[in-house]
Amino acid sequence: MKGGPDFDLSGKKVVATTSPPGAINMGTFFAYKRLEEWGADVETVIVTTTSGVQTIIAGRADIASQGSDEVILGAAEGAEMVAVGAPSTAMEYVLVAKKGVSDVKALKGKTIGMSGPSGFDALLARFALEDEQLDPRKDVKFVQIGGSPERASALLAGQVDAATIIMDDWEELRRKTEDLELILYMADVVPEFPATAYFAEASYWEENSDVALALACANLQANAWISSSEDTFVDYVLQVVPGATEEAARSIHQAGKEVGMWPTDAGDVFTVEGLGGLVDAMVETGDISEPVDPATIADVSYLEEAAEMGCGQE
Image (cartoon, rainbow, N blue to C red; front, side, top):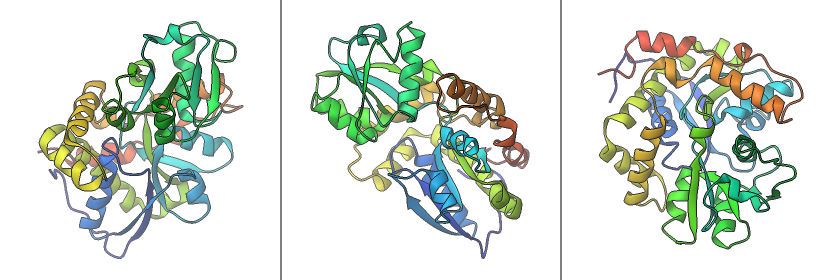
């Protein structure tokens, strides 16, 4: 699915980061491919141990497709990052626990695996606990495990009682064991928070506004493509994601659409207000010490212009 104009990005060299390929972030791979079709020379860098902000600041990338919290954390530390879209809007995380732990309240006294104290997964877990009047500092024990695949492995090995992991990892994990169960979708805990974002330094967008507009258009096209056909989505996942299974890809597509992961209305894809809600939450939890003005780190004008140009429409 195209929808919208063509762009001339001939001569543009773009180094772009993303997380390892998974069904949830297929929109990113679709969008980067679209930039190539418009003439850009795109080098995709898979980052695992560093953040998109760190990769950009180090001069190893121009743009990033990573967690939206990175934009806020970067700004809090003085980096002038600006987000222009979101490859996945709703939170892609789920809370998974051992059989017998049927809800969040049952986590009292349990051990929860996390990536680290300032990790997005830990932040979401704290929100879920607080919603049920549990104190994250007293009522549970957090232990540092690593990324979502490592937390999934820790769950499988019985090293922790629960963990917040990405949908992709849960869909594969639940096919390996019957000793775990999904407690809740984090999209239900924080429905207004953007999950991920396309971002770069403000100066990069100023100097490459054509890339920003093309990426916004590709963002809308990717969401429309994902929403249009489960079969084509599944086929693409099987081509791009090593070890992916058709059953898992279909489950993720269905769950993603249910929670609003890939909206086709530009006004729903990424909002300043949603990012502002995440800022407030991160101040409340102590992840950042002072609030960041969301209007300075989010620019939705490219999405709005792309929508007016017909991007993502039949």
